[in-house]
Length: 328
Length: 118
Image 1: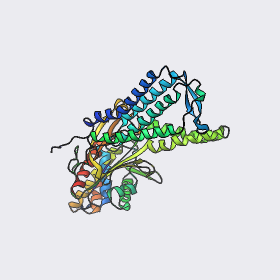
Image 2: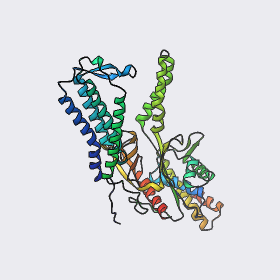
Image 3: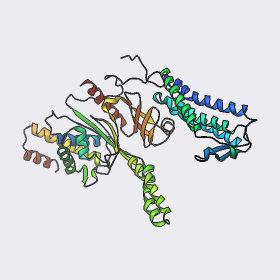
Image 4: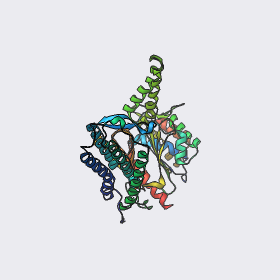
């Protein structure tokens, strides 16, 4: 079978990333240009924070060099984040972020222009409205530019499923289920949980209430530390071993193919950026350890991965079920 | 662990489920000490009655292959001998089926089994 279109990724990604980086480059260039053009007219200390009341009079100050470094750092940081994580439908977000931040910095510079005493600098609330307007205009531009990027691949047709198979009789029903666990996460979560009563009992009040923060680590940690992966007529489901919720499920309708991948530490860091429940631009994963990983390709082109032993059987069954589902 | 049942088969569904666990244990795709899916969950997964699954689990417990504990669910017995035991049980069941096909009564089969112990 030949397919006319390739999945989004290798072809569309560079253009999309370039378009996401562009507004930040523009904002950065404008900012640096204004800094150098106005270098004679800007005071050494800039007013950078303004009271909401009192007509927007300055109440916070930053040195000129620090302000320049801060602006560049913020724009570069935000720009890098958007460039790495951008998706086609969210391109307008990159543009509006760059528009808002860029406009705020430019307006701040303009307010400080020719100021002799930073404390006298005034930035009325209309500045914020101007920045919001700039963000809106940039958002529109970004939204319009998204049409330059090829659309995500439409849902795969039934029969497009690829990968290993299992022989299943016509009247046979099959399900696959396997528990998997992360020992470091179990230990960490158990420690966090144990710290809660210890902190509540031993630490002086009311600071001891901070011990409750341990629950913020322990509860999701324990939910993720031991999970059960199921492949059956409903699709792939990952849920905590002991309780049925919360669960992550890829319904059989959305399964375009399943394969097995061997993940090593380098691959985990490169593709998922660490262990746990990972959400990246083009993939989601429940990554609890290295080794055998069930990788499910969705009709939308996104991937769902879960590290689980005996993933080969799971992938074969999932492909077989998906194919049968498409046929019936 | 892969569970596959055929509602069209003459073999009771509970026995088919038990056979899946035995087979998985014998071929190494299930390990001693591993926890089986909860009966209700497996029933949901396969679209069979929960009592059918429990019948299968009960059979495995009688064969000494799993432990059923309240609140902990079904766990394959720990210990390195579990896979061998699963293979032995499978062969015994095959022998029993063969004996029935040959027309032996249950007593005759048991008597035959006893002679092989001497």
